Length: 354
Image (cartoon, rainbow, N blue to C red; front, side):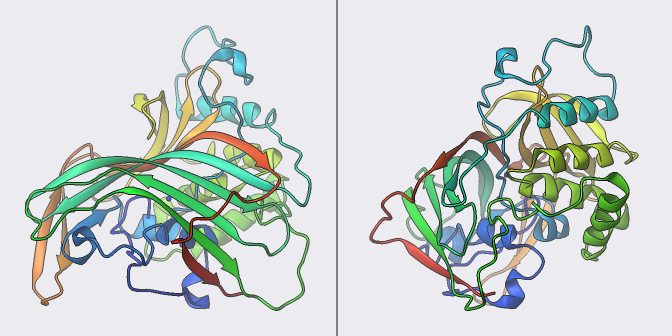
């Protein structure tokens, strides 16, 4: 749940990712390469598609694929909706309830299957004379085990923004196929749930999370632990015990703010738990108000923020991203598939090194 608060890396001219670019977060690669090489739209050549947090997003935001089924938000979908007589008073209580709910989620896939994730995304797009919040849909097919191709299918609307000198983004559906090229022996660790071997005992997990967060030196130190947990929750597919343990660790963090009137990228109401960076950008996890299921993640501007971009002619241009602008992903449904769907003939193909 798709960097989700940064100046997004736009891959329009990059035919193949390098091992260096993949280091640290394979999920980040998947999010960044959605804007694949087939697009040479004016928004990418002249304008700006903005994520919302800068360094935090670039280091932390992974593909939002979480093992939660039936995300509609009603109490009869499982979880622990209805147990509390009153709404939780603080972030720690919400995280405790969410951790308990996570333990009820499991898919039990076969090794030969694919994890099929349906998401709704929202991004803030910027041109020299204005900006627009753009909603889209996304589907992912990720192999459970083995080095097999994975597929990302994006459907975006036609985007029209003022100030563009050439026609705007046309929109439509596009496939991006990610093809492993590693020649090393295939291991059996889950690709879809690549954190399957992480410990769930809190002391051991805490040490690994702290080590993970320490890698992101561009992020303020006070945000690294939260950012690492946020990313790992997004990646802890097929491992509800790990998700629950991560949410338990999050209860130890001071300064988590609760927005009880938030909505996720799909417009569903929820509790948004997050921390604020020095520019006022909120990095949030969103949970359903009744079931406490994880709904998704998002980065929201709490105030107007200025960004700069260098144009192809070398000149700097500055954009103001307004308060309330959002970049995020919402998990709608997770299911299992026996194979990839038919891939479009014009699909972009991204080779993934070891």
